[in-house]
Image (tube, protein in one colour):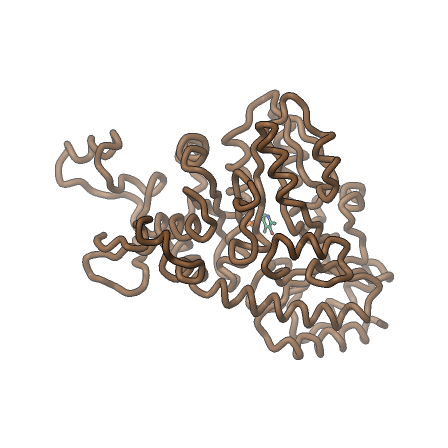
Amino acid sequence: MKRRSGQDRSITQHWRPATLAVRGGTARSEWGETSEPLILSSGFTYDKAADAAARFAGEQRGMTYSRLQNPTVEMLEERIALMEGAEACRVQASGMAAMTASLLCQLQTGDHVVAGRAAFGSCRWLTDTLLPKFGIATTIIDARDNDAWVDAIRPETKVFFFETPANPTMDVVDLRFVCGLARERGITSVVDNAFATAALQRPLEFGADVVAYSATKMMDGQGRVLAGAVCGTKAFIDDVLLPFQRNTGPNLSPFNAWVVLKGLETLDLRIRRQSENALKVGKFIEGRVPRVLFPGLPSHPQHNLAMSQMDMAGCIFALNVDGGRSQAHAILDALELVDISNNIGDSRSLMTHPASTTHSGLSEEVRLQMGIDEGMLRISIGLEDPQDVIDDLDQALRAAGL
Ligand SMILES: *Cc1c(COP(=O)(O)O)cnc(C)c1O
């Protein structure tokens, strides 16, 4: 690999976010290709045995094995780090691999974690089932309540873990307060930023320590690959995360890294247009159903907080109907354009019933505590003409008696 301008921080530090999304991290091979090269190779070779020894000793820069480094994967890591404003980033095979790694790499038996109650279903499984199995206690709180964070702290509290906006109830967490509190008490804050991405919200600017991603969602943005990422200080990534990641192997394949690199080139365009579209659809839906949960709308109780920490509100929102599962399913079944799908952040508009899909693995008690009832639907607005999405929802709501 020769020209590494996209990886030279003395050059990239002057670039603005939209430029970084297109060019950050790019390294070119001897062929001078314009698009990022896809290096599908599990291992690498050495001219001399001494070179192999030097690379393993960390004395010579270069690749050894794709569980440890890969040129295409490194381009993605550098691009995400630059966009996030982080010193370093490592990518993983999925968002859940990223969440698991970001927690397990720094926790041990006897530690305590405080986590937001509204969360992606598998994130709740990590805090409710996996961590306690290893003797790591967790306290689940209403993450919107700043006092609840203060009250939950114990001497052994090691990590605050939350998402904002949170899936699927769209709870917003006060980043400046919660991350500031964590700093003050020597606790590491881990923020799942999948809904917003660095294009709309940069938790590190509010004092977060670690930002973790499902890159499957907005970053790929076209429903193709699973991917995850963890960003933080160089010390956290190199000394805490990397020993865990390199030895347990939740690595992202170079092919998937390449797909996400191409996705990031259009992230800024997509997320802004999709956020605009979502606002239009949200305003329409608001008059038609009993409740819409969308931080982008003034009716959301945390609208002001959301807009003080996000550039735009993103493309995902939830709504409630009074007729429970049968009415929610009737709306989904009547859709002609919007797909029934549990994915989010795609260029296609997608709608799901969380209680029977993404959050069906949780007990009803936990679901209700999170605010997910049988009449809730979640929608992710895509890049279609928003009027076509509105027309489709209009006829589907009518078909379901609304
Ligand atoms: C999808 C999602 C995850 C999990 O990511 P995968 O890529 O599906 O493993 C974690 N957190 C949030 C907020 C998500 O939306």
